[in-house]
Length: 322
Image (cartoon, rainbow, N blue to C red; front, side):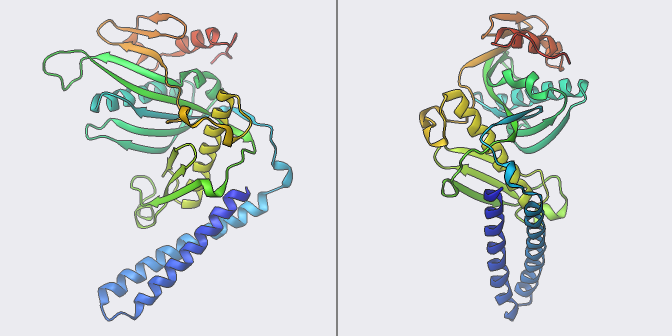
């Protein structure tokens, strides 16, 4: 909570300085400059009020006993990240197919998908997507999906009928109820930009979207779902905390400073975990050495059996029923 409050206080100060700079332009003899300055001041003051209200709410809700070193994972919330890998535009289209597969499975389970960030390539495929999933046992069901997914198929843009191989990376992170991962302010680099999409005109007028870089590991988190910068900051910091916690668990270290930087990258597991072979209508999970011969149905979201099989054979003896 202290880190979030400090970031908000710093942003309030930055906004105050921007307001002062724009107020100086009001004395300009150029009417266009005065109009632009007036509009900017209005937008900046509105954002400042929003941040001040957020800070007030944080202070009211905070209690010291909320801080703890014991992580408590909420099994009903998962943070899903999908990134296009090798293969150009085809990799982006495959990333979109994977997201559609998980989304349709989620619909059958009455899950709610909240997109936090999406960027697309020229073909309409996904370059990067992050979403928060709310639903019964969402993390427990999806946690074994983290890794590199490979597709073998003939792209729609391939006139010669040749089979291409492309990849996409999937990361499934837990939503931590209680955790105190030490993240130093000096290790964080914040950038703000104006986002399109949800939120209407406010999103386009004010720099509400955030990009957070954790300098020691190179982890980059982007968030633009919320209309207000403070909320996007809070969500980005929460995702970073989950990523760092997961890396600490994977590397069996006790602090952020002990994370081995040569294993960081995107934070996803580097090994290829699954191959989707379209010509043979087959999906193979390389971790458990099992194949399913109904790829067309799997891509439509029928992945329950596959998730169950992976859970039983990857160190987990039983998975709660859907």
